[in-house]
Image (tube, rainbow over all chains, first blue to last red; front, side):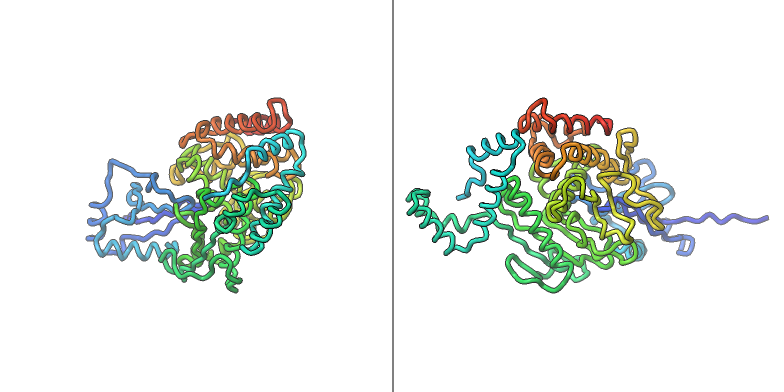
Length: 99
Length: 358
C-alpha cells in the first residue's frame, strides 16, 4: 500500500505592480522541522481571510504581498510579527521575488 | 506671490477659440510663457524695462519684477539612486539644471519628468504635482532586478527590471508620466485605489501617460501606437498595455501569457488580489478615451485631453469613490462647458463611453 505524502507549502504571492501581474515563490514545509508548521498555525487565522493589504496607503502601483498557507491568504505587512525561523523562511521567499 | 498663469481674459479667449476650432492663440500664449520661463533674471528684468518703456507694463509691476522672476514656475527635479538597496530617497545623483549624469536611468527619468511637468504647465497652467511647485523626487535603481515602478505618495520609484522579462522601468516616458499623474490624481479627485474608482485612477495615469508620450513625439491620434511600456516589456511585439486595443498588448508571451485587459464592461472582473482589478478594468475607460480622441481627430491633448483634465479636477462630479458612469458624466459636463452640447467633441465622448458599455 502506497502512502500519499501531502505537501504542505507556504506561498509568498506578489500582486499588483505597474504591469498588474501576480507571481509567487513557495517553500515545501515538509523539508523543515515540524515546529515550523506549528508556529505557522499560530499566525494564520482560519476564519478571516484578508485579501487586501493596505487600502489606505497612498502608494500606487506598488506590489502587494500575501502569504498563503493551507488555502488561507493573509496580507504580509511590514509590522507583522514572526518568529526568527519564519522570518528566515520569508527572507528566502522574498529574495526569489526580488522583494 | 504667485503669478496668475492664465488670466480670465485669456481663458475666455481660449474657450472661444476652442469652440471655433482654432488654437493659434492658445499656442501663442503657451509658447510665450515657455519662452519667458527660460529667460534668466537679467533677461527678464531687461524685458520688463523694455515693455515698460513701450507702455506695456505698469510701474508697480516693474517694481516687483525681481520677486516675480524668482517665482515663475519651473520644474524642480531631484533624482536619487537607491544603489540597488531599499533606502529612500537614496543618494542624490542629479538635480534641477545640472548636466546629464551619464547614467541612462537617471537621465531618462530626469527628462521624462521635465516633459511631464512641461505638459501640465503649458496646457493646463499646472505647476507640478500639487499645483504649488512640489519637487519631483525620483529614485532609480531601487532594489535588485526589481520589476516595477510606483508612486509612494511622495515620490516616484523605479526598478532596473530583471533583464529577462522587463527592462528598466525608466525606459518609457509614459511610465514616468503615469506615475507622476498618480500624484496629480492624489491632489485632485484622489480616487480610492480599489474597484471602479481604482481602475479610473489607473486609467487617468495611462491616459495622461500616453498623451505626454504623444506630445513628446508630436504624434497625433492616427500616428500614435497608443501603447504603454513598449520598451519596458522586452520583445518587439510586446507592450504592457494598449489603449487602442486592450487585451492585445502582449499575446502568448512565454512568461506573462496574454494581456487580460477588457475593452468593454462585459469583460469587467473583480480581481481581489489587485484591489478589485484596478490594472485590469482600467482598459475600459482607457479605450473610451482612445475612441473619443480618434473620433475627434488631431492631437489628443488639444480637445479630449482638456476635457479629461477638467474632469479629473472636478471633485464635485468625481468623488473619491467615483464609478465609471460618474466619470462619464463629468467628461460630458466638462465637454459641454468647453465645446457645447451639440459639438462634435461632446458627441464623440458620448459615443465612446456608450461603445465601451458605460
